Each structure stands twice: as structure tokens, then as C-alpha cells.
Image (tube, rainbow, N blue to C red):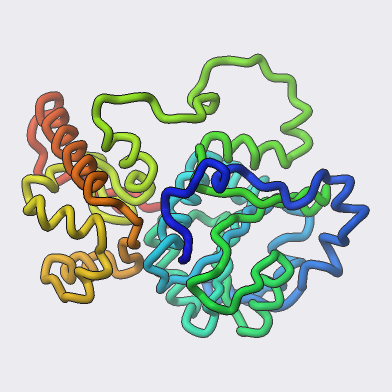
Length: 322
């Protein structure tokens, strides 16, 4: 992508696609007749009509990805995995998630299946590909104009087809705020009377800490990694500062693609173990990499003091719902 991982606050602000639901209905015919009803194929190899089967009458979250992307796509999908987790049982019942390939010629259903499994996507989340012309026609209607993979849009599209409300948003802001935005697309949810209470969802920032790597880890690492909880999209990072040389860690954090190109044996072993998704180049500066390493080191020490040593953390995949 041409965008940096750590965009400005303005770039993270949700940009409304249209001014209001009423103006959408009046000014643009979003819905049947506007959104293409072309055939698409899911990660399970099932052929569906895009509008009739995946959008019509539904609340949808649509992202645009390609599985060979080594930049923002993996992080976008990881953040959507966090969103799916927070929405819980709403996904597949009231809300449906769609990840559209922008590289349908290479993104086969099998490749999308491997990709979706890496992110532990549930049954309410469809990854779709299809004929190149059809996929481009669908993406074009959602504002994707570029035919250059590295320049495709990073925003997600949120919509309620039943009410005609559509907007763009970003997955790189506060995830709890995004949960509220998705829920607010449902008129029944908006009409409920709620008593304001203190909750994590009202916290739109990161707590200040004397460990500068903490906020950075939560923002760019936690979507794919845990510390002491088990493998997620990538490996559990508990104890990684003891297992790996710190100079190696800094180099890998800053530019994993370069180390893959150099055929670093440790990196190649990680590629073999986690083949579906490769760590993207996140635009992490040298000082930030050192802060992340210091945070990982401190967390390992804290866990060792509170829980004792644990050489083999339990893998999330042991509880994979697939």
C-alpha cells in the first residue's frame, strides 16, 4: 500500500460516505439495481449472487483485500477479526462480514479458505472471489477505482441495505468505537433505552504508561499476536526476547519482507509454520522497534513472576471453531 501503518488522526476519523440515510435514498440508488448482483465464489467454494445472497436486507461490513499482500491487508483482516470477536453472536445473525478479493485471478477459493482460517473467521464472515470483470464491477460500485493492487482502498464499507444507510470507516481507530458504529446501523439497537455506564467501549484512547511500547503493541501487534495466551494469526510472543537475538528482532520488526528476501532461516521457518499470512511491513521506526522489544521483555518478566515459567503456551488453534 502507499499508506503508512500509523496514519494521522484525521485519516483515522470515520468518513461518512453520504450525509444521512435519507439523502442516500434520494441522491443515489444504493441497493437493488445499483449494487451488482453478479456471481461470486466464497472460501467454501459456494457460488452466490453478490447482492441477493450477501447484501440484500442485511447489515454488512465490507473490506477489500488480497491474500498475497504483505502490507496493510493482513493487519486490516486481523483488526476485523477483533471486531468479529467483540460483536460476538451478532455476526452471522444481525451483521454479516464480507472480505472482497481485489486479486481474484490469484485468490482462489482454496487460498481464501486458508486465509480465513488463519484469522479464525466464523460462519458469518464470507471471503469472496470470482471472475475478474465481475469482481472489478462490484468493487467499482463501492468506490474501488484503482487496478493496481498496491493502491487499493484500505477503508471498510459499512451498510444497512434495508435502511439505505452506507458509510466508510477505518479499522485502525478505536475498535470499541467501531463496534458502536456497526451496532448503530440497526434501528432496533438505536431505539433501545440505555443507562450510561462506565465501560471499555467509552474509552477511545490508550492509557498512559511508562512503557512506550505498550500502546504500540496494542495498536499494531495485538491483532495478530498475544503474549502468553497462545498463537493467534502469528506466534505467541511470550519469551521471544530470550529466544531471539535483539538485533534480529529489531530487523525483523522493521522489515520482515527484506529478511524473507534474504532467506533468513528463522524467517523461513516462520513462513513454513504460518503459511497463510506473512507479517507485513508496518513502517515501524528503529526507536519504536526497541520500545516494542522492551515491552515484550517486561511482559515476559511480569508473567514469569506472576504465573511462573511456561514453555508451551496453549494455542488458540486448540479451540478453533472450524
